[in-house]
Length: 136
Image 1 (cartoon, rainbow, N blue to C red):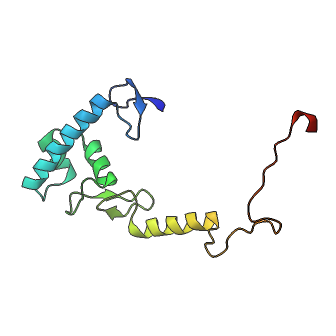
Image 2: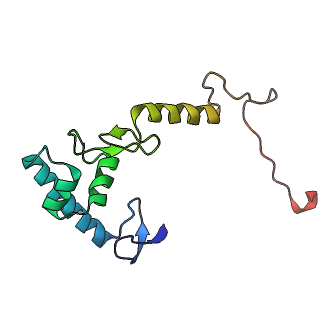
Image 3: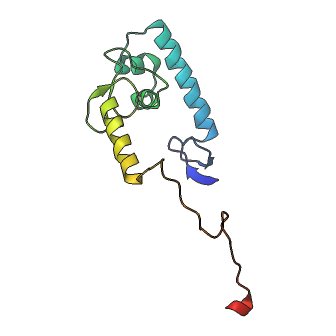
């Protein structure tokens, strides 16, 4: 378990996958529900108008769009690709940048699924040897 400082309140907390302390996470969820309910009633609103109407910080709304928790299906609810700057409706990267990054990542790993590692000809199982003090 890793200890971190909460980016919202500054308190130390045990990081378990979400970079907010439990209290700020609870508050974040309340704000998310507020935004989500407003969007159900007003689906054509943009990020700026949504932030003003719900009194939730724009950065949080953008974060939720990037996380895929809110889909920006309308012209005002878009973010830009972090790589090329193209307008996207959710996530961090546009489809073409995502594909290109995936190809370059898998290429750098030299993934070859057809070849299996060969075992020693003398045995099908790997053998280990523990040295005793006398061997040293």
